Amino acid sequence: MGDFNAHLERFYHSVSKNNKGRWQYTLFHYLQLHRFTDLQLMFSADQANPDPTFKSPQNGATTRIDAIFTFPNFPFIPLHYHTRKSFLYLSDHLIVAAYFQPIESKKERHDKRLSTKRKIYNVSSMEAEDWQAFADYSDKYFKDHNYKKYEGLTSNRNNLNVLWTKIKELLIITANHTVPCIYRSSEDSLSKPKSLTSCYTALKKLNNILLRFRTKYLSRSLWPDDQQWTLIKDTLHLILSEHHLDPVDFPPILQLDNVKQVKKQLLTIYKEVYLKARLEQRIIEQKQIQHHIQLRCTNYDEDLTKMIDSILNRAKQTIVLDRIIVKDPVHGQILITDPKHIQTYAVQHFQQYALPPTAPPQMNE
Image (cartoon, rainbow, N blue to C red; front, side, top):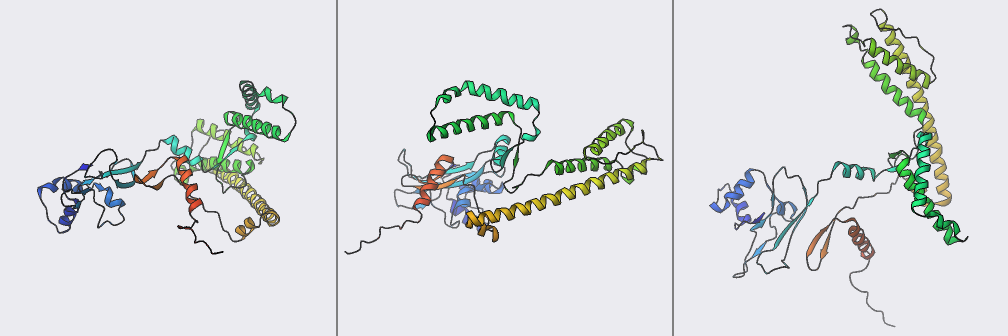
């Protein structure tokens, strides 16, 4: 970036006619040869006539001799490019500014994905020691934040709201530290029961086991050895007991005369678990149908707008507003990425969007 003291538009015009041009264009030739990007051309509304960056004080001629280039593997994504007058010192050149998207860490990307999902506390998976940890942390939070002072509050509506807010704060903070949680998409209105998820887990394990009994392995006498077969049998017995299936007697070791029979037994177990999963899935679908019927009836009584949206399959469209460009009377166009400032400018925009540009004329009495 910087003042190249060479007219960029003349260079592009020269290149379009396959001319090598003057020696001042040597650097531009190098940048073009190595596929550097001229950011002003990228963001200019009229790429044929981008805005100038220099105005001659002698004859008032305008040229573009200042620019910012980025190489192809530049790690930052360009967001915006603009020029503005210098407000710190007098100069014939305009300030050339470019904004780039910062590189997000893995944790930031992970947190950003989770922010679009619902957090659900998995209370059913908590054991006795987990509940003890919950009680210990809540007692500690109660003492550290002097919750005892709220015991003497008088009975009125204002104090009731204060107590509810404080109790909610204590429960949520304690749960975030001690209760396991899962993140679910907003489209999943009903959670899948454990009876279905356990079937999926068992099918995944059985599929991995069956992959070791493929025909091409058995034809070459390549099946699990004694140690692997012992672990596989333990897994199979656990699946049979968890899903209440009939017990199966597996041979102590795998041999040529029994390995095909074992494969048939594994396929039978897989089919039984698969049928159970299909049945559980149908039960969930029926529950979802009843849930949406009840929801539509409730919306008919309480919220007609939601009922009409549901009938027309009209979903609420949302966007993530993480950057905006505002017009400043002094500095021109400015890119804003701070979330608080974005919220302030967005509120101002929508509050003033429907207002007429000029005041209405006064009516005669």
